[in-house]
Length: 114
Length: 114
Image (cartoon, rainbow over all chains, first blue to last red; front, side, top):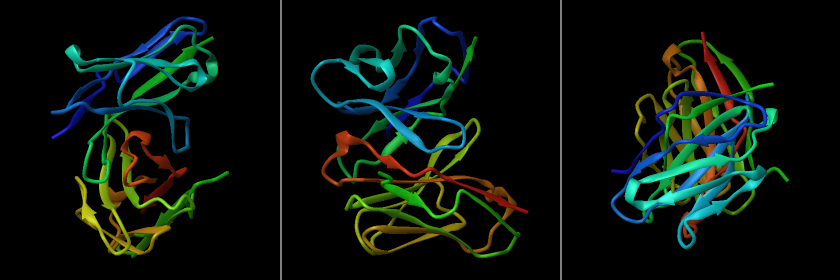
């Protein structure tokens, strides 16, 4: 069965500092991997995704993520955080069959200090 | 530009009531999903549907049922609401053959059972 681990429940960074959110997955084949962001009281918005090709993927709002098969990781990064990036971030892994069901991690809450 | 619509943002119901949460998508997606989101637990899949009148249990189906009579609509039913079903409920949809695209989420329904 596929699974996702986000080891950091809360992260606090200063505005302008760099950010890295960790995600480790478990899946038997090459996975589909996603990062979503959720602002307070809202649904989830897709930031970026990986399914093949270049292991460094670019997303919206200046985010990027790198797929590392050897480490089973898909960490999210941003070089300079803005106060508006404060939100909850979810990593997800998708199966390649059966209706593309996604399994989500437990989320990382990002706080940005001004 | 709204693609997945959940009929209520906030809902308060009494213990024992029958509760319907409605979700409509206008993207002609085959797959639809219901998740509940709780702090520290992330998103947990309740039920999903690959097609009209088809449904499959997710990870936590107990106490819930679903209905999909039309392709665009997927309803979550709490037959007899209980306080432990107080949660944020998120609906999502996706194309069946586009696993790499991920999901489109609704804005969520925050249900409180008193």
